[in-house]
Length: 269
Image 1 (cartoon, rainbow, N blue to C red):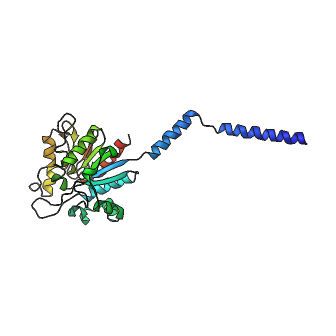
Image 2 (image 1 turned 180 degrees about the horizontal axis):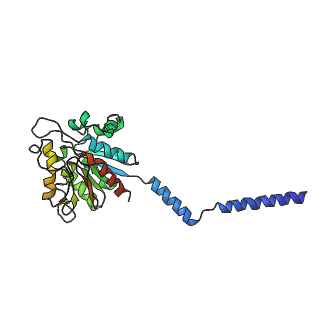
Image 3 (image 1 turned 45 degrees about the vertical axis):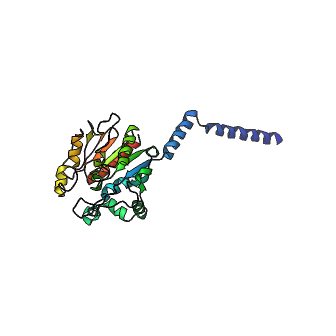
């Protein structure tokens, strides 16, 4: 009986040992698991730069950033796990273009924004752009609205920031009027950053359609062409975005999602 017990005990030990061996990971499996874990833990840090300008020339009307051009990319990227920081030249509340907050301009994303207390709090308390360090971010995105034509087009801090992102070969995205921020940006050789680059932006005909051709300080389409960009466009109000290297531009509010998708794809490379 004692011999039988010993035999059973030995058989149990051998069986357990065999099971343990079958569960051992090969070195390649362990490395693969570690890589997958790294991918899961990798964070996307994206800087959104909004305008601080709220006056529509001498019209007495207000302007600012266009809600849809902020909201769609914001949620597209946020829902993918991105950490988003929002900054403006002056810091504090970023002005919203009243026209973009009207029922006619409403979309699912603007409705989501209007019901998102956290996002609205961020817009009301933006960071000061001069305090932002490009080294802390994987990409930068500029929503449009007419405001950037007055401040971001000539803002030295914004210009230097875009130039550093570009030198670092990080994605830089702009939509609608936001390519205005590229007006005085140079590449590493001192040429306009858009020179010989495929770009788009708010068209002259779209500006005419909203009746602001003689109000804005310059036309986005004209500026991009003057600076040597290879400008292209679709029909007015059609969704259109184009990428050339790390530079991503969109034509109008309807193009916001396409710009966000291209930006995300470039970050995830």
